[in-house]
Image 1 (cartoon, rainbow, N blue to C red):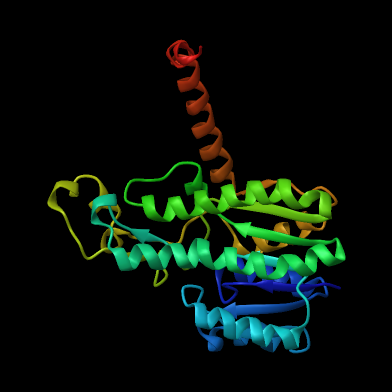
Image 2 (cartoon, rainbow, N blue to C red):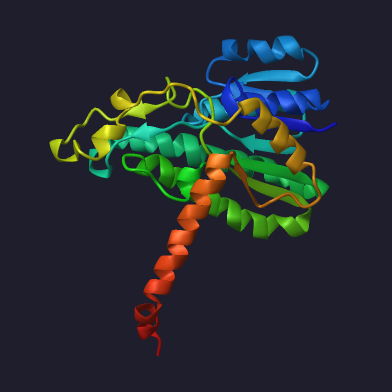
Length: 273
């Protein structure tokens, strides 16, 4: 039995991870911006589930959550899952929204990583799971800010993998495709700064134009089971794609990149001494 911390556990993939970890017999601290949204998990696993209110964009909220976690015990597995999207052309980005999404999707998770690593290093074991997105591989129009937070989280994870693997600590990045979650609902933020020249591009993906029929191929509960199973392996994948659409999308994007490298390699090599 291990002590887990899963952020953003009230719904979607975070809920799936938390439920799978609890079903496997672990103790799990679960976070949400609303404690009431965690009642379902607490009711199912009252002896194992520890609910905590957490707003990752608020340093004071992070400090309060970490203080409460002292009563829960040392964290063996950290799951940075909480996050949200933001739809805006790059020029339409609003400073407050940009700062908030970076705090939530990137800086908050970094704070948690830094907080829990000393214990993991001391015991020479532990695991960190950072939930990213296929958007980190290639951003869609109007999603540059969200994609950039996930790309940055992935590169932090890559460095972390090299830094802590020899210390007995696992680090796994998860890249989900489309899953039936609340991502396109209240969790999706949108710009109020509309620039007409982007009507034919970024406006098509603005929040008010997003129609979600909840027919995404991914099942959050299956995702949770897979993630919990993979991190238990001695050598889990460094990057775990989730969903058939994710496999197709990332494969296509990487093949296009390789083709572009091949097309322009003669020009690229002209800069050598």
